[in-house]
Figure (spheres, rainbow, N blue to C red):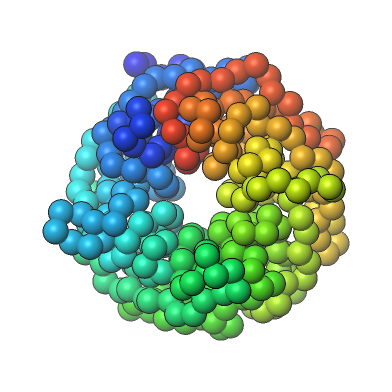
Length: 363
């Protein structure tokens, strides 16, 4: 399919085996808010999280499995991207050095790829080689510890790994030990940063995180108790304080059902923070205090689907695309510029078991 003028590509990662065959690609028009399905773009096993290179010419995916061939490890794969059609060409695959890899990211210079392995509680670093291919893992760290939730925190569970946009340090949310562990890359190896970890409140279960555009405030979404933890630093040269500045619920007052948080993003203009609730099936909308970075909930908007595992804001922050895993759908929501609240614009596309939404970088 030829590129439509003004449209952008959106890649969808999925869980396979229930109707899905891999990675799908959509086309979104940010002017009109329209969303078009262009179909399966690459077959893959459980490509549950995706990331793209800064130029958008390469895409990397986890294979969230407990084994790859005879190896007791999941895997990560590299693809070349046709930036006109969104077609993916498989380049190569490497082990993730852990079971159930669920998140990955590129370092700021694009020369290293880091992955978090949920079941084994490990994080690994892989070199990005010429032509976008991946080298074998060059550094792996095994997390240690447990948390107070006996059924979910019996051991470490690395759930995401994200670079600090100011320092390049890698921040790993570990759901099992209520910590965000910090690493630096030194001569191709992961080394503890200073401080070595930020601590959420006990039983929180940190899952994903997002930095404020000013780099001073950090927002961590906690899966197990449906909260957001706020951390702060004085400036780009200062480390984050190790204790949370604020913990705030993602749910409306009085809700007593079963629910778990999943994803978190900051609006490009920095005025709002969004976090998804699986069970309540909504996205919590928070206003950001411009002086302190703390949050006030202004609403909890339904995604009109079940189990919103992932969502993404477009580059201008006018639209939010939400993937409902158990409704097999991606829906488009308009973002109110004054309040940050969400309203469905009627646009939706059927995608089997969508669990990751990634906009391709603008051209």
